[in-house]
Length: 497
Image 1: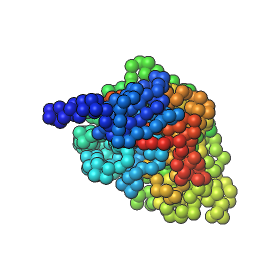
Image 2 (image 1 turned 90 degrees about the vertical axis):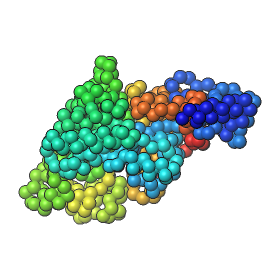
Image 3 (image 1 turned 180 degrees about the vertical axis):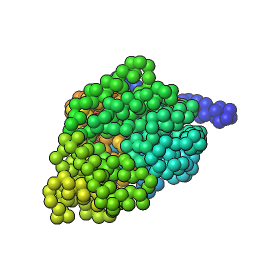
Image 4 (image 1 turned 90 degrees about the horizontal axis):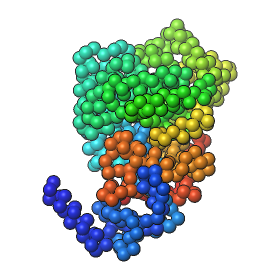
């Protein structure tokens, strides 16, 4: 270690003396990631590190990039990804790179690779275009120990889950994630999550939560997440902060006030968001949690039993009424493997294709049929633009696309997979002036790096990793839309080194 450190100093000194670098970025507007005002300057890069920043008039390099008229910023950090599978089939991660993202934190919503150490080894051997960090998923851990049992863990089971979390943290996980609307996480009581979060906290981890409810009980769910952090002594990150369902529009003021109050009381609670009014998750969330207890065989048996099926449907329709929706036209299929002809169509449209009557009861039957066919990935148009903008205005709100690495042309994924950062920079910064460009970049870089303890990243600073993005703030735009999602963002000129 000492010899390597001295060698680094020798190389750095040699570069300073002779002015020869790998890459020289000149004439750019530097946004350093702190949130401070931009300034004109040059950046010298060698060995994958930022060597010098300033007016480097006499410096030379193997490659020189003239960034005149462009913004030079730290590579963006997406704090909420689901790339466990996609990164291996699409290691260039073009959807992220073309959106300015150089680092993704995966393992969110309670789902991660079961062996974090092995996952990192495979990622390292792949050498993808982006940096990858991962949380350990509570659902993954619970399923490994208890499968889909709808009950509290026995002492020995909780101990086994704690051991798995500890192993993941020691292998390099950055924290624990929960998906408390998903199975089996929905079956966990608060005290179970506190116990596992406490273990993650021992290794300086973060508790990132897809909270238990983002609709009519969002305030209670936000409170639970905050209290878990307080009891476990761990920083909290509330994922894709939102309020869904027409009946709940406007409630972001109440839920965000809970976060503000926690921070004012000294608790490290932050949030992330994707800049869209539609969410995306599976079709199964439209059904009651109890229907899935015991695994797929038990679920299928319930669907075939007329009395149980009627009970499931009754609760589905009650949920629809609670959200103040007349039908399921707000629910659009992103990918249905059993019949890809359904992709891009709403449940209401699919119900009509099946020749059924146009009413909520028949649409609920269509959903149950699709669940019997394997379920689907969905897009739900359930949020209000006013809430999106209000949440975005909060200084401790980061950007998280909540996306994977899509295969171009396959399915109808949510546009957030392609354009989250560009949309913030173009629509909400340049056009609607929700925040300054400096502030937006801070949220995408140093705020995220600090929260998840990503060392030497998130700032343009000498000695830091040369994760750098160059873009045109005048033209940067997202192009992915719901009907044509497979479109890259534009305006990003150069990527990471």
